[in-house]
Each structure stands twice: as C-alpha cells, then as structure tokens.
Length: 405
Ligand code: CUA
Image (cartoon, rainbow, N blue to C red; front, side):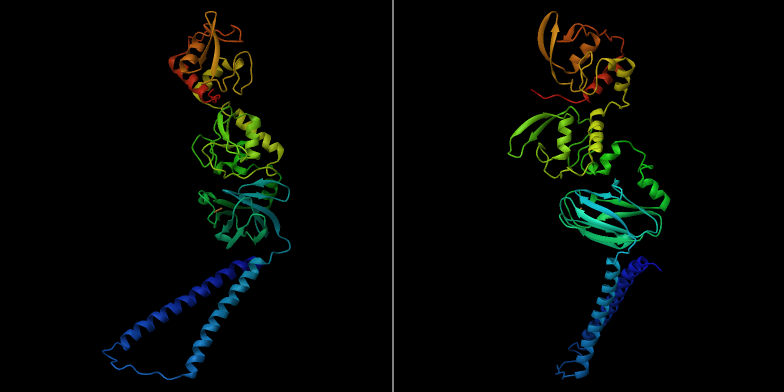
C-alpha cells in the first residue's frame, strides 16, 4: 500500500471519526436534555434538592472527554503527518497563484495553467503567490494549502486514477476569486512525457493559447466583452487614455512598444477607468513568448473571417492598404476610421474626419478625395454591392481608432 493511500484514507478516517463522535455526543446531549426537562419539570419535582459530591462521576466526566479529545487529536496528527511527508521520488511542480488563476511550471521550464501530472507518481507542489493570499484546494486529493506572496509552501499528492479533478481557490482574494477554477489532469506516464516535451499542445491552439497559459484571459477577454481589465480584442492601434503614477494623464496609441510595457509594467501606465490590479509579468513570460503575444495582438483581425475582410481580400484592397499600421501604396486601414485626413479635393487641401461617409466616398471615388501624399493609383470600386460596401466599412472600423486630436 502506498503512502498516499494512507494520507487520503487517514484524512477520511479522521473526518469520519470526528463526525461519528460529534453525532453520538449530539444525540446523547439532546436526549439527556429532553429527559431532564421532562423528569425535573416542577409538576413532577416540586422541591429542588441538593446533589452531593460524587467522586466517580467527576472522574468519569473528566476521563471520557479527555480520551475523546486526545483520540481525535491523535488521528488528526497522524493524518497531518501523512499529508506533510513528501515521498522521496516525488515529481516537483512549481505553483504560482495570481489574481485570478494558477500557473504551473515543470522541471524543464514548461508552463501551463492547468496542472498536468503523470498517473501513479507522487507530485510535490512548491507554491507561492504573485500578489495576495490564495489557497490551493483540490478536494479529490484532500489537499488545501495557502499560497503566500514572498513565501514558499508545499503540498503533495498521489494521483492514482486518470481524469480531471477540480482545483479551486479557498481564500477570498477579490472580485474574481470564483474564477480561479482550474484542473488537475492526470494522464498516463507516456502521455505526460510527450506533453512535457511540447509534442502535444494543450488544446491544439496557436499563440492565442499563451494568453490562457499566463492567465491573461481571466481578466482580459479576447472577444471584446468587458472584463476586469480592458479587452484584448482589436486592442492594437486603439487610443488609450493612460493614468501615470503621479496622476497625470496621457494619450497613447496601443502600438507594440506600449503593449509590451503594459504586460511588463502594468501599473506604470494605467488605462483610465481600470484599477491597478494586475501584477507585473517581468521575468514571468520568456522573451520569445512575449514577442509572440504582442505580435498576436498586432495581427489580430487579419485572420478575421468577416464578410468585410473577405471583400477586402477579394477586391485586392490589401495589396495597397495594410492592416497593421504600416504604409504600403495607400494609407493603412489600421487606425484609419475616425482619424483626421488631409485630403486634396479638386486641387484644394482640406482636413476631414475619416467617418463612414468619407470611407464610402474614398472607395467609390478615390481620385476625388485623395489623401495628401498618396498618388492617384486607386481605381473606383463602384461595382461593390451596398452590402459589401457596408461590410467593408464596418470591418475597417474594427481595426482601431486613432487619437482624438
Ligand atoms: Cu485566489 Cu481566491
């Protein structure tokens, strides 16, 4: 019999013992109480009488509770010892808790946000927290241990059977405490090895999965919905109002340099309207992964399968207009909508805002309102259907808005 069978069995035995004793005591006390109420009611017992000393009674009611208390303590102590005695051959996994998720780091540096473990191998968890107190809780393994910033705690368990087991946070840690739900995934030894070697992706996803791995998605949605932090959906090229540590504000276009700073030093430039809840990822995300994440944000929308995007591809718009802010033959679509354009109309220069009407005109009759600095290269796309035109304009709108100056 392995030690872990002991640990889990001992915890359960202790629980049952205490439960059993409590039930017996509850029943006994309640029954006696009812009996006394009946027996010593003043109708049956009008004259109170003095009960004398009883030596044996005192001994009995001292010894019985002492035996019960010491017995419960002994079982508790024994199971606690089993929970704390990590087997020599245990596989070590580092656990970092943060608001609001878990990060697991394995022996070879691989990270994940669900805990992968090989079956039938004792696992030692070395735990800490990045921000506030959390508590690593896996009921299936009778495991609960606080994670404390600046301190290491540990726990261990033996996953006997394959399957998914819930991980919860058992320490109230803020508004998204309940979101700290994760999974212990127990897989066969060989599968664990190939997963660890990176041959198997968690869910077969690309760089998008990094945002889950590092827990970004618990606060930042990827689909535009509101979260504790700003959504990452089409964040690239958008204008942010930032609040600096001294309270001053500045406008900033979300370019690659900004996105990188926002991940590494989130509280140096806080987006207006959001709280300083995010911890720095400096030293947490390796450089190559950080680049992939920033690039993923910059290229978002490019893989968008919307009709507007389809029209832009079919009509060849993208050979002259980039979606990433770079200049090709024509102005980039990124950040176009809402920006101020200096256009040349009938030989005269004027400033206009790139609103729906402007974009429509410049597609249908590009030579009439030519953006200053660009040549008359673009043909009129007046063969587009109204539906295609609207979809195209809508799609351009999603590619970010420039500073409102
Ligand atoms: Cu972390 Cu509650």
